[in-house]
Image 1 (cartoon, rainbow, N blue to C red):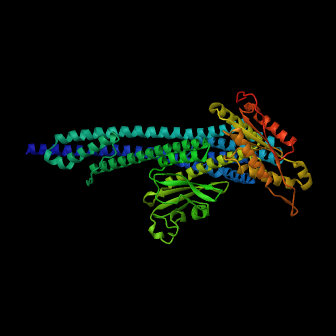
Image 2 (cartoon, helix red, strand yellow):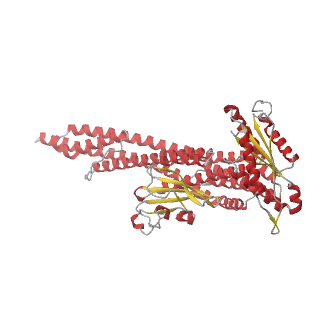
Image 3 (tube, rainbow, N blue to C red):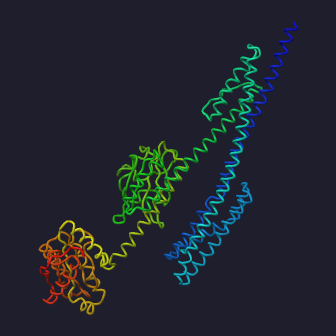
Length: 611
């Protein structure tokens, strides 16, 4: 009996000890779980602070850009955008309140306040520059917003905001590291306690402890070990014990859930960083493009990587025929015509993104259908997103995407809008460069290239001729008695004559950009690869075309307009650097011989083609 009692005492002692160890292990796991909650709270607070201060650096640099654009172009729209940016920036009291409520520390608030104060000072400088520009002092205004001091102020603001972010990152990192250290300590303690419990299980009666304690603890031990190795894919069995074992299982579940959440947050941050890097690279590549075709190639390369699985197309607006025309596509889209009028897209009509299909009930765009199929809308089952590409409130293109499974997340939709904005900016910059280049190289009256571009093109042709050995011919013409025509009928009639003569020259050149207005009533045509005889015949055809023009003044016909021509070819008549002067000498000879004729330069000594 004593032996029985002793065995009972040992059993009871083992049971009490096991319960105590289980409670300790549960407490350790709960402490580890609380540490992970602390880590999660630190990351969440960092997110809240980021959200509270989001957009500050964008507002600062946005209004700086609008102030610069205004003093460059004087466009009142930029001034309105600047004023709107100032209003947004002035609403800093609410931002500081949100940051303070989110738990920002004194040093972080001080740094953010410093950045805002510097931004306000910068706004004062921008307003002074705008006032100087409006007062007529354009040079001073531009110096104020493009000076090294101004750039330094912008850089200092950016550095201060970066320091604010660094302070947040440093505090978050310290708190996360402390939480991880505490979690590891309590996890280690829980493993020690579980190991002691397992040892106790081996020492007690097998038939009592096997089902009640040993098996659950062994399963939990395996789970904890795998969790310690950050294997969060482990599944936790459903423990129904209303004791410490059940508490331990619940603590392990919480620990696992916290670990999974942390992994999801890390994966999301890593994915966002990767996508933002891709967007940045895409933007830099587009800014370096020199043609719309290069921009389309960049979009075709990057967009399938940024939005995998989303097939689509990019369209560009062609002003010549008022059509949206496909520039590129990716991932073999199923719908949308290669070209269509702008009015067939709802996003272009509304000037805003347009979604249809999937879980979004809306009208489909007409460019999704073949002509005559619009009555069969129910047969179309592709969910799509159309985003207009705009610049200065003018539509310059369209971004079309097909949505797999008919859905798109808010995050992915945000990236589509960001890409559309970057593409629009790149195309707008390219269009501006083309306009500036055209203004610098084109004659506004006749539409022909000017003398400056002629000299550049001539040098290029002469270099090519030096390599290939082909001739380069030049036709120079001058409208006869043009001054008398101006004096008699007025400058409007003179301008009309110049325009019509330019039209004749365009119709007799096989390649664009080879007819030039040399100055006044003089014109030049460059003919690469054309022999002297062919050049003379071409000049004769142009002479007849000019003579065939008819003009009226006050509904009465005026005297026929004629032109005199000089033709020269290098190397037959002269060296390359003498081509224009030789053709001009031949033109002068035509004038001396009575005008309205073609004169070919005499053969000269062959010299090097390039000066």
